[in-house]
Image 1 (tube, protein in one colour):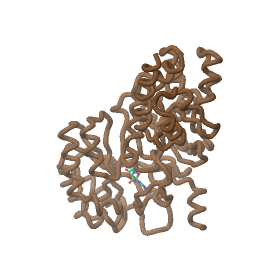
Image 2: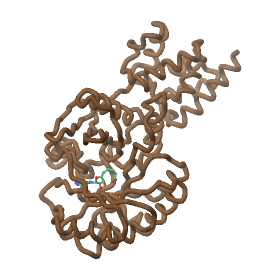
Image 3: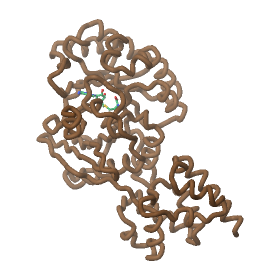
Image 4: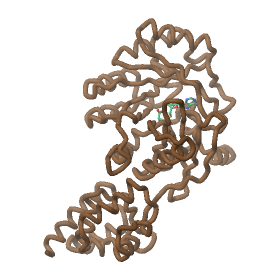
Length: 399
Ligand code: SAH
């Protein structure tokens, strides 16, 4: 029996190491004791060292239950409360015995997000300011249209990418969101869709704050939860991940054979212009992006959407439109021409209607589907690129 327990604990520790709990003080404490220490003792921390229970996979939770003399199926019940029912505290787990709930409370916490402020736009868009367990704030948006209700979620606190036209770029990247924090944003918007629109959430886009491919493991884990029957059971084809174009990670996603959609923020298919707009282009130039996207298409057979803003005097000429049309032929794709949402009085201004019409004409002549996207939620700073938690921006600008 002891050997079995020891073995189970070893497994658990290896799994925990996967999500970097090895840096957790209790892990060091455990290492000193050796692998035959019971999991319960290992997880006997002082108050502020409790582990977020949602960092455990179902298998890990089952191992924990077995190691503590509990039935395996109880772990499944707890897991269901945590994910499918999004419960925020152990006391509400009504089919779990009091003693088991006490044991869980002693060892774990549930780091749930809190919607701190909800703003309603005149067009129906809702923006949530979401408070995390460490008081950091991210934003997520509910976008209603006649056919869909879309959740636009954040993947990082702040962003490290410095796209010159984006409000989030003015915040430094503070940290990655955990899978639970990403998942919770979706749950909050799902509930708001049901409350305010009496409709289900239909789509999810990773177009909020941060670069999802620079928080890849957590984003993938969140998507796994969102799509699994134990989570929200949403179809992966209803999810779109938007990236600035991190080529190495596009290849990785292709290797992982992900089933969701990919959008790339292109904004220019000419290196000189794109580098000026998005410094990431210096290390991930247009040609490399094209190669990575070829690889993506070979592996996944999924078409890509290019997000593209046309700015006055920057990329509003025929040369840029033709370069975009050429780039679009690399793999099957479509283009969303996004309206620019001003973030300040700076150099960026939405192009004139003639320029937008010229782009649409050139793309159509080349057999490429292009849609002109109107902005939503501008009056509450909830549109693309406006997510920046205004108070923090004010702080940064004034400091
Ligand atoms: N980091 C990811 C997702 C976040 S931004 C990415 O870059 O794709 C989501 C989309 O909004 C991107 O296409 C981005 O280029 C665009 N965007 C950023 N700032 C904008 C602004 N001020 N107006 C319009 N679109 C903007």
